[in-house]
Length: 111
Image 1: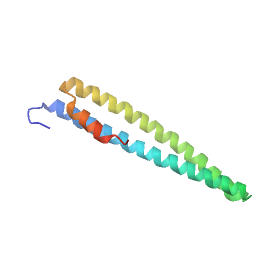
Image 2 (image 1 turned 60 degrees about the horizontal axis):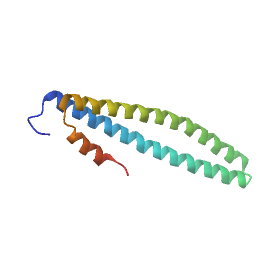
Image 3 (image 1 turned 45 degrees about the horizontal axis):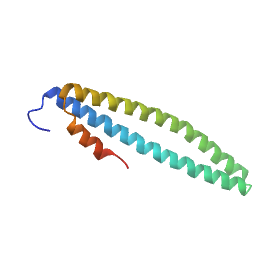
Image 4 (image 1 turned 120 degrees about the vertical axis):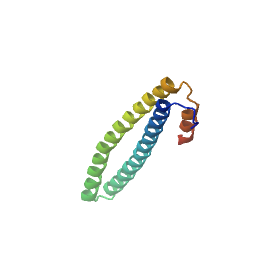
């Protein structure tokens, strides 16, 4: 960050960085939960095919519980995305130039 940037602009840029990092972390956690749900579902189906009803039922309940957890994580990720966009608009208002946060945003892309 150059020294000639105003303090409110620096604060806005830091707020954007924090919001973008949190959005990235929630996205990674959402992916991990989704992968775990798929694994639990495959295990439950395998138990039911082998006619192991009790382990299959427990795996199914675990999948349902993870589904509820995924909804909570998805809500947090949605909030983080909104906060990131609000922080980006604040950088536009405070700094006028969004070049630094655009470079940071490009560096955080997962794909």
